[in-house]
Amino acid sequence: MKKFLTVLLLATVASTGATYAQYYGDALRFSQTNYGSSARFKGLGGAQISLGGDISSLGGNPAGLGMFTRSEFSITPEWNGTTANARYLGTSTKDSKNQLNLNQAGIVWYNPIVKPKGADLNKGAVSVVWGLGYNRNNDFSSNFSYGGKNANNSIADYYSEIANGLTPNQFVAGSLEKMAYDNFLIDELAANNTLYQPATSLNNDQRKYETREGSTSELNFSGAVNLSNQLYLGASIGLVNMRYNSNSEYLESGTNISTNPQNDMIGKNYTLSYRQNQVTDGSGINGRLGLIFKPTSAVRLGATVQTPTWMHIQDSYSEVLDTRYTGGGTNTNFTNNTQTYAFEYNLRTPFKGSVGASAILGGNALISADVDYIDYSTMKFSATSGFRDYTTINQNNSDVKANYTSAVNFRVGGEYKIDQISVRAGFGLNGSPIKNDTDNDFQTKVYSGGLGYRHSNYYIDLAYQRAETNYTTSPYTLADLSEPVANIKVAKNNLFLTVGVRF
Image 1 (cartoon, rainbow, N blue to C red):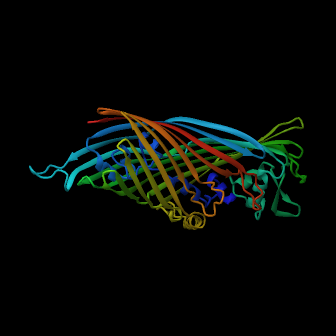
Image 2 (cartoon, rainbow, N blue to C red):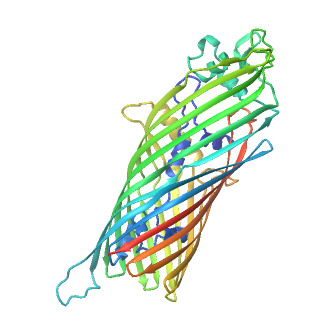
Image 3 (tube, rainbow, N blue to C red):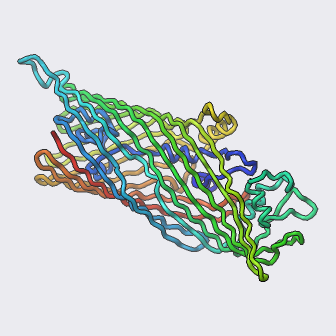
């Protein structure tokens, strides 16, 4: 489990210089999206499947558009504040990242059905509603760091492991093991030039810094029909755009304690810098079908299905290892050229099914609840015409089935109206998609609250949302699982402001 969680957070390259096989961590990252929603539904914990009548229906249950009785436009900017508290080798660190984004914008056109004079306007098709909206439904932005003294191993142990089995003459130019060897960080074992050992001391100082940016967003084209003010049917098409950028630097300082007399840096102090960068862009398409049924005027039942998103993804990964030695009256710098590796693939994300129920209480209050089902083991990679690396594709598909499972998410929220003011609160829990995740490392808890004001043709809503999750990561991995582990607690504190007008 620990090694798997590490894979999700590290982009790396194989010692052969070919792209590394483990893209299934990114597949999960790009598949965990939320339904788009306004500040009103954010304040309700996102419990929106059965409610309708809100601009959120553009990116949620499209059947909810059928409940509109007027045309409407709204926009929702957001403020994101992310904090990461890490503990590594007994040392604690804290990082934060703040930013402003456009979370949602949309417009809805209400079209009543023209009927013959004398016809019952509330029977049959009552209205057709169309809408166009933008929704930002996944955010990757965060900063985190960790560090401490390691008395057990060094990243040079990792470099030694990936070098094993090759002679120095067989190292591929630009490969990580060649960089480490040329920087005097690893040595051949005596009398065997295909096995290696670290030349670095224990009790070394280790630091890791990483910055992530990016998001997934959708442009939704949606429509719905109102049948007898009791049954609402809707459909939508979503055009998906995704970008993810990760920059990291690992620093390690210690002493070269090589026993190989050919190692010219013996006894000197070293500081190595291992830098990685990943830039990933993707685009895709999905669809949604939904319905809402009102068995009584106070009860609403809803359901929606979201097709997989079929995405085309382009990935660029680069890395470089540099080392500086000091001591003995001279300083020596070993620098290498940055190595860049490109890969391209198609990804099919999971199908998503959601059901919800809500009730109007006494005319001035409501309660709503949703449940989602997502089977992450159904994610699938496929090759593109430009990159027919079927070995990598097939290995990742096997890893998806071996490591992922289905997850259930639930959300609940309530609203109470006092004249023109509404008070809201909600809670959500996103289940872990990882098999045998006994520690719930990938479970996310979401707390929310909000206020709303409505007057004539205008309204304004404010919501606060806090999402909490925990995970573990490591700066490198070792075959015996003895690598150091950082435990990180991430909290995303978000403010949403929706301003809307009806016309």
